[in-house]
Length: 132
Image (cartoon, rainbow, N blue to C red; front, side):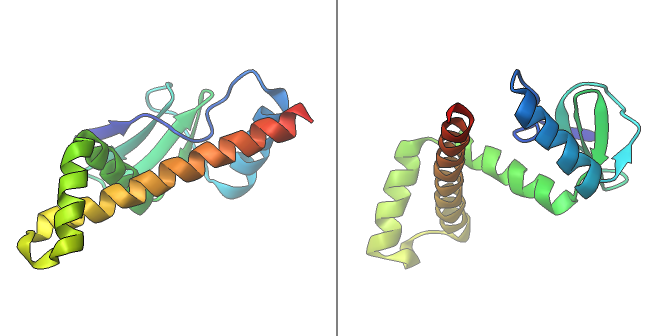
C-alpha cells in the first residue's frame, strides 16, 4: 500500500537558474534511487516504511517523518476554517472543554497557517531576487 502526496518542493519549472539550484541540492543532499512511477510526487510505502520523492524523471530517498509532517498538513487543511476558528476561540477561553483531538487539530492548523505564510514570503523573496 502506497500513500501519495503532491510534491511541494523541488518542482522544476521554466526558471533555469532555479532548476540548476535544484539539481545541485538534489545531487549533494539526497541519495538518488531508481524511479518507480516516473511522475512527480511524494510517496510512502506503508508495508516497507520506505519513503521517496520523484521529480524531473529522477527519484530520491526521503525521511518518513517528513512525509507524515506533510500528510498531517493536508489533513489539517481538509477541516473548514470556521471549525478551526470556533475551536480556537474555545481553546483560548477554556482549553479544558476541548477533547485531545480537537486541541491537536487547533495546533496543527496553526502550524499549517504559519507554514503557508512562510512559503508565501519565501516565494515572494525568490521572485524578487530573480527579477533583480
